[in-house]
Length: 137
Image 1 (cartoon, rainbow, N blue to C red):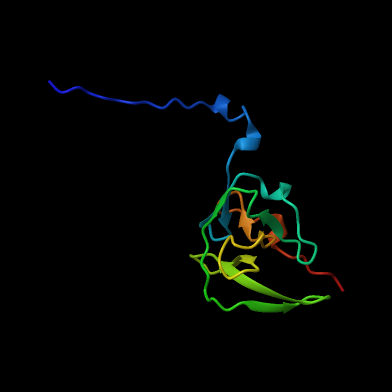
Image 2: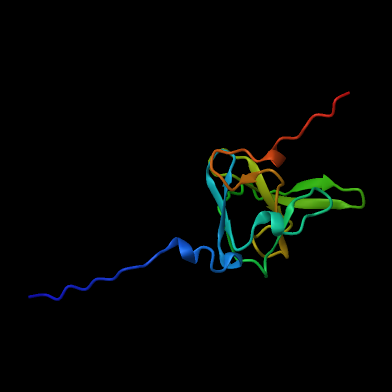
């Protein structure tokens, strides 16, 4: 008679509260497509002063970004002090602009920037910072 080998995994909700700083955080596009899993909450990351984008340090953070590069051609933006090249990353489902890097190959530069208001923690829920309020005239 053959031996039966089995394994089991024990999971409990008590483990969730054990060390919250070690949890992975999942973020979705506004169209509900899975986009980012990262070892820190976005609101705890530093922000860029020029466009308020979230800064992910490529050497420090562990993350997976599910995005496509529509072209290898950079977008050149004029900033107050200089010009900036952006290699933009888009949602694979709806093509929304989500993130950018300043180098052509992913994770080779010092940072990856996540556009403010482009991601949500809850599928199907639009975050408050994704809708720009109009200034009443």
